[in-house]
Every structure is written in C-alpha cells, then in structure tokens.
Image (spheres, rainbow, N blue to C red):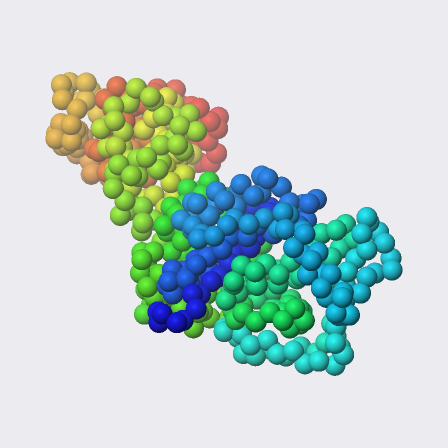
Length: 457
C-alpha cells in the first residue's frame, strides 16, 4: 500500500436481536477478509437502538460466533445505544439547516425528526459488485432520523457512525441496497464524503429462495453445536458467492485472505449446499491429528453419557482412529462409535433380518465364542486365527462368518474392519454380546419385534 493511500476501513454492524445468521456471518467474514487482504481495519458496531428486541443474550451469541469463526476486529465493539447524544446533535444540525422537520404527531416523550427528501432527484448507487442502480426520490418517503422515543432510526445512525468511524467501504447484503439512496442523501446533507458500496448477493436455499429455517439450521451457533469444524465452516462460507478463480474448494484461511477481492464476488445468489459442507467438513476431519480429533469429539460422547471415564486414553484414541475416515461432523461420533462404549447395544432390525435370522448362524456364533474363549490373546492375529479355524471347520465363506459376527457385536451391518472393531469393543464385551445374540437366536426372540418373513413374535 502506498504511504499516501488512505487505510481501508470496513465494519460489521449486527443488530443483537437474535443469533448470528449464516448470512450475517458471511458479511462479517467478507469484511474481515477484505481488511486482512488490503492491510485495512475492521470495526465492530452493535446496532442496538431497538431496546425492545435487543438482548444481552443475542449480543453474547454474536461475540461467541465471531470468536468460533476466528473473526477478530481492530476497533470496537461500539454500541449505538450509548451514542444517542451524537445522533441528536446531527439531527439538530439538519433541523437548523431547514433540511429536516419535526413531526406534529407526538407518540413519545420526543417529537420525531424527519428528513425531507428533495423533489425529483435521481440517485445513482455506484456499486463495486453490481451495475449502477438508479433511484427516483419521487417514489421514496421522507426519512425518519429520530424516532419519538428519542432513539435514532437505522439509516440515520448508520450514516453518522460510518462517517465518524472512518468507514471507507461498506460491504453488506444486497437486501440493504434500497437503504443506500436514502443514506447517500443524508451523506450529502451532512457534508460527509461518500464511502464505496459493495452489496453482496444473498445466500439461497436449495430451492432458490432466500435461506431460512425451513431449509435447516441458519445460525452459526447451531452449526457449531452440530459438530462442524470452524476452519471447514469458514472455508465453506468464504466460497458462498466468492471464488478464487481456479476451482479450489479446500483453502486455508491464509490462502483465502491472499486471494480475496471484491471483484471476484458473484452477482447472483449462492446456494447453501449442506451436503457440500458435510463433505468439506469430512475432508478437514480426516486431516486432523488424532489428539485434536479426540478433544473435539469427547464433549459429544460425554454429553450422550456413553463414555466410560475409566477407559484407557490410548484405547480411547484407538477407537476414534477407527471411525475418523467416516466422520463428517464431530457429533456423528455418538452414532459411529457409541456401540464401542454402550452397555447394551441396539440391534438394527434390517441387519438382524439379513444376517442373523439365517439357518446355521447360531452354530457359527457358538463356534466363534468357543474360539475366543480358548485363545489367551485378544489381538488381530489371534482373532484372525479364530476366524480361519471356524471357516475351515464349517466350510463357509468370509462373508457368512464376518457379517453375523459384526451385527452381533455392534448391532449394525456397518463398522470399521471387524478385528479392529472387536479389539475396540474389548474381549469381555465381545463375548457378552455374542452370547446375548446367541441366546436371542436360540430363544427365537430379539429384544424388539421383528416384522416380515422369518420373524418371531
């Protein structure tokens, strides 16, 4: 940056009336990336002039979400609720110039102050992303500056703060573009230089409509709770409407900062594809160290109540390593690894019908139980020896042996490799589960009602 060039300054200005929405998070991210790329600064401003809807809980949720995303700021946070006198001063200035008037109708302790729009003006919004947009003042209403409750209206407070805080570039969603001509008129009336505007197309759901709760989770906090890795989520969020130009889908934050520019933001809305997010999150999970992944998934296992605090740390990491390749989110650990820790497994009915309710399965399980009990060691080599012995004795294929054993010890037809899975479960638990399954088969009844051919009521 040339020494005489003005430092670029952007801002993120959420209203604390709810959790941080995915769209707001992307706006924050784009502003942060622009500041980092240009050597500029990011200002955080909390627009809490709506005293009824603004809450401390929402403010905290915004801060927590920004921290999780890794978005920091250079100045702030500033709270508009503490800047009322500043707004009143500038409202009075416009009144004294004859550019604003007070409302005759008094609903609160104060008279509302309203900016009178000039007649038949053409306002051109020059945008760094979209083509120029022209507005006619004849179709706009006069602008409320100060409400009758003594608080500043959005457009007025926004203009005052952006000027006083030295904002040079306003990067926000294009749902704000209708506010821009009003704000331009206020900049002119107050004698403030205009910042540059960049209106980012909205995030859309798979059906092409604006992203909403009916499409699934929309708050950043919910994605954190569901077990997404913050680095993967930021990577995904950055590519919603922006592209580096070389079809890369996985990028480090350093690479994104280096490549980021407003010129590469698209003009159309970006589709929020949850399946793509899950895929990308899975890629990041597979690249995590075992220590980092174990720390990330442990809270989900503890919350579910299925972890055994007496579990040896190395053994716990071994179990995590078995499912790492299959995890798409941290929260899936309870589904993919829960059977390792459960006292009583839940049988998948379809797996039972397909692999256990077959002729000869009871005999197979009985043989495996005998082999495991006869062997002193419980290792991959020892298990392989036992399996080979049963196969040869009963003259059966690998699949006819492995599938019933897998369902018997995990309750499911899918698991990591069978020997490693059984080692993860442990010798005593494996024997207990095999014997329980054998008892159910011999009794002709599982601990649930099985429907269909071969079922036993």
